[in-house]
Length: 502
Image (tube, rainbow, N blue to C red; front, side, top):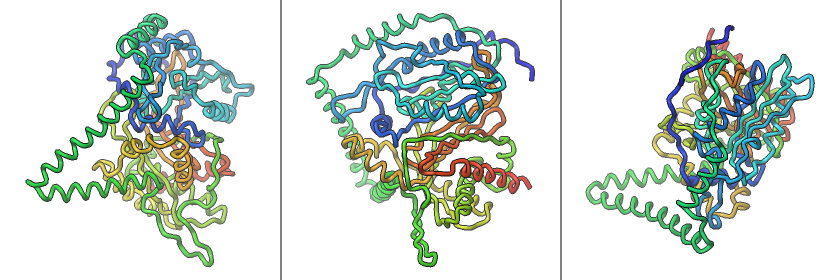
């Protein structure tokens, strides 16, 4: 494949940025629960390059990105106690070399060595006194190749927001131009001075007052909305009934978020054995992680999904459920349901950063059945769940606002016990239709991986350059045969392709 001509022009307009000075309630919850490594809410992405990037050029792109997106030089600063979310302030000691690092694999530099290194690095917690992102360039991958690991805290951006951020350090050609030089030290000093002038560091008393004001504004806003709604009821009695119905649905959605619910199935008799919902094999949990990857031609996956009567995400979720069922069948362990989730993006813009998503949980049918039949059942269940999110039936922010007022130990304890009821989580992202470059290195493969957050595994996919690439991120204590699960999942996707394209 010949390389494209040198890039000498701007290839894309600057995107809007979606960053607030204060974390949202949902972002603050992710920031707080991270104190328990079992509940780490963060993910990352691994890219395979055909050669090492030009590090001077890559560093220049990251320096320019820091100037363009100030959040990359900002750290989270807590408020008074737990009564207001953290704020973002420029880090006066920002050091680009801390965040952009080069490491090397020992010979022979296999893919397995790379994935093991990524899993170890992922488990290193963020330095919470610094900006919450890291970029590792990894040399020594066999075949003269290299890799990168980019990880960013979920409080900064969700998967879509992070993907748009990465546009600042990728290019459409191998011979990408070098960004104009920037004076990082001067930029940081100016940001620190502007921050101090606009919002001087408050005293303890001022912090208390500011926090109280934040809580008052939050509660006052709720009260105003309620009062306005009640005032309409006299003119429209049906409106009152609709509001009550909506409130019931919201409470039910929050209950599902807290309990890992989603229409759990009752136990099923199997001789003398009671089969509870979920996997009886995947009850243990740990902080350890093990990463596997796989990919499939995107056109085949799309054709299979269409042939089976659903969407690409239906194909994606059904494949992992079928693989998990086959894994249990091999172990001689019958299943009734698997407790899982998928992510519904609520983003309505194309901005960099921020969080706009709602996790939707449900129980997937896992009894013996034809794979195509399970596809139809899962497609219908996810369509219904997605419609509930679209109509405001489930809200992560409402739950987060309440949880942030509770002691962290209480919240993490509840989250641990409830997450243990979840078997796995799924997420599906989109990326470029064509291969891109990173400072001279062509990105041939890209694999995302998402947070387990207390589940047995997370499976995350991204559509990139004609491939549907999947990261299967597992807790090896929960799943004692990680290779076996990977093989069953891969075989299940291949089976669905054959069924849908026959």
